[in-house]
Image (cartoon, rainbow, N blue to C red):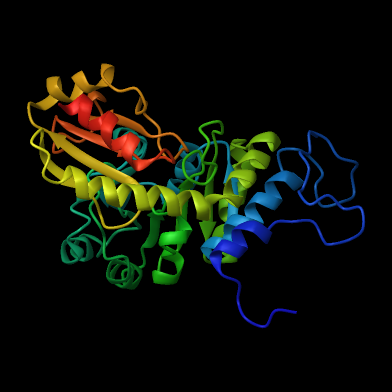
Length: 352
């Protein structure tokens, strides 16, 4: 038996497997069932599914908590936000995923919450805003500005004030950042992105540090019916198995692209947090110049999602809900697994 904890690369491969017993499959099969014989632990398809459980065991092991899977990242976000009492204050980054901002603004419009948007990179400002907050929402890196938050410092201040600390870990993944170890209470993922990793799954997940939060989140999923498909849970787990090698390759390529792009004359700015596979570039000439590259690339795909094996890009201000403080010419790049020379040549040609 192994005496030491497993490395994350190993955990991604071995967690959530059936026992090593003769004639057992190596993978938990797709359980296509809505109804079970009564008297056991499953009972009904909205309550549980073995395909979900396998995925949740693996992701929970990587994040160091208890995972609950959802039909989408938006469903996961909604479940976490529902933990906040009516009328309470939520502190959130001014630069965040537009779906998160949309849900927060909807809560405000219906009188269900008060939201204060802050510069998440300013830990002192976040701590001051957290004094009477019920929840502090963190993105690090932020989407698409790629700002970094001091998660441990914010968590100390927020939890001292009695606030729940939530970190959206979609960009970093548990291989590059484990927020629960840094003091967060809850981690959120759009599993559609790096976790599944092949642009063919729509799914979300919440990972909690305590059984109490896990029970509350599971209750929301059951009541609201935001359950994932067993097939998508199977595919997300299969994608998770290769996350270490995919992320390692994509991150290596991203770093080299940043080095080559930094002095490109078509760019005003190159933003990169120092890790991960997301880069944001600000193109001289603003929105028109940024939109123009969409028809000039052969390898880079103009698409709104990210984290897949293919490289994608998007001008984020094309979405009306994007923060007005994001430059009009900012283009978010999601670096995939193609060769770095081919990616650079394709992008440089489009920029040129």
